[in-house]
Image (cartoon, rainbow, N blue to C red; front, side, top):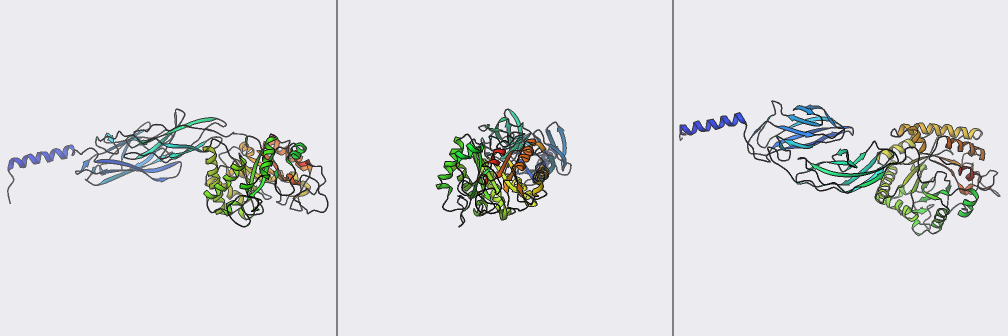
Length: 538
């Protein structure tokens, strides 16, 4: 064994003591602090920073600092000491986790309220991606594809394509005009607290851990819905009408005889023989793609200053949501109809076996979300009504589950149309009983849509009646019944007043069934019921 010279031993000892007292230097980029959410519940989240030493020697002591956007704040925290100044937070090591050996890491965490994530992160004065005086000056790429995916009377939803960065994007800032609206970690956001019937402009930019910001994306504009009226642009007084079945009257006769010039055309279905192709009344020989007869009627309605919606579903036949295999193909089938007739309004009349079919409803609402996105991307508005059968106590459990499923899948329903017939109401007090059912449904909708005021729920509710005798022997809607319910709809400023159907708005001749599809089975003049509905103004 060789003996080390005494002078060198003393020098080495001094250097070692110096290192212990001051802490070893570490190369730039050897220490990093990485943020991650470990749990997220919407109104808040649990986050943590992992501080890793990739250097060749131990590090003694660390300090992580960052900012949180307005609306977000740190609550409880652990494995660190915190100081705060406004939205700026500084976390220092505790006595037991300040030393990080080469190749090792430590973790501290916190619970935050709000959805905003840390920005402008620094570690020991340098950037969190390089630490110890290292610097990252490369900004993320600019977000692209900013799109409006939905809007209500008080909010606008957006999505965009993810940015890239040499180290990693930590979040995005969404601006409403020149003001920061919200900060998110993903590639979608909803800006809330907006005024109804107001146009807004939005941009987004990306941020990395070092606080570098990308350039702003191209801007998009969106107009919030009306807070107290819906639907917009007509179809407030709009009877159902079968354009190719049940002996349809000429459009010219309807407009001149009834004064009604808005119609809900029924029904587009899947072919009875199977397949995901939209057809009128489920008849494979009446494909929408080849249609000329219904198209001529649509053109005639618009030529008279009116408009149409097309209704998918109905009690009979196979609804496309049950026939198409996935949301994408279903959306394409619906879109084919929208494009064919240049629609701004569509209706989904979900009854029978389709109501309560969870998989079919999920596909349908995912497809509706796609349709809304398609319309927004093209700078158009698509209004969607959901028609529901009711019971003597308002909405059924299946109705309520369907409404909740629409919310869960991000499908914005503009109008909830209550089919207030065929539920077993008493003929002697039909008008009063319908009002009782409508008030029950209104209370249920207020509970299901807590984001809407009671007045707005009325404005987003439609009332559908049936003229004359219905399929239930106990029910009878006379002209006086319609007049009374017109008053109810006007009083509460409902979004739509309709009835099934305009094809039936004439007196029967000869022998007919109890609820014939071509006549009302009561004494009347042509278009008696449509003339009453036509007085509704919302």
